[in-house]
Image (tube, rainbow, N blue to C red):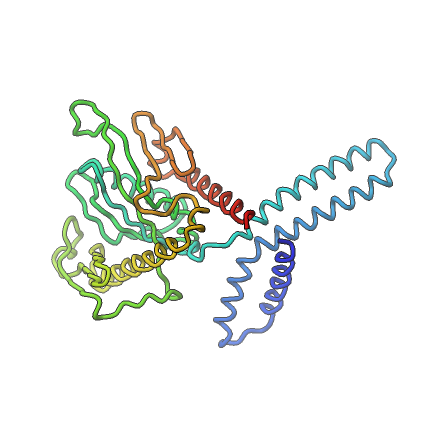
Length: 358
């Protein structure tokens, strides 16, 4: 590990030297790449420098202890030595985590798709609540939310909804939401007071940007335009602004109707289609790398039950990590950071164990 850290330190110093050189207009792309690499390396380099300083503090304290005869000074030096050794242990663990292979999609925006599953209208109502939960969480992170398509039912539920969350690192946190979410409660329409169980599925996909080559052949796709359905603002339902794309090779159909402009809806529909095609590629790659998947939190399978929201008991349980929280109201209002942090920590711990086995 330490040989790699020394190499990274040398590389960081090389980058800093290159960035200090005068840049020409033709160097802008190279300059951006260097800035990105510098940004990625900075946390590792800073932690490693702090680690080396703590190591030097240990050596200095030991040397001074050998020479010091005053009891009070010796006690103070022993305390400093103990603190430095503890800091070294903490920094070693931090460096191991920083050196874990990074998901190349972590810094990207995300496209999220929520679909009502078993439970009829109650599942659709729960889908709408989970959608609002994510919107509240995104707002708390100062991220932007753009709805791409929503299929609503009359009582305020959603059969399905697709939306984009725009914000740095959005995928790194939201990716743990992918899977089946289950709700247990007494529906408003239930006269007998019985608890029902309903489900929704959540798919979280990184937005596909220009550095990923997803080719969509003209012959493989059909584009239909139509009037938007459901509640819309002025002009939305009176022009052929909605766009539906059908991708023949996969059978994927996507729909966008939230914008007044047909061009804007078309752009959103293509962004969703590209994300779905990229997600298929990612899933196939994960299926081929069974060992890697076993080192992650959950399988990433869309059919995996990841969480239960029990309203009568006011609790939320994440089944992948065995976490139960009794603050359902806050969670439904977007307070999901504790769950996300726990998933990230468990994922890192599993990967560290895997790294230690190799």
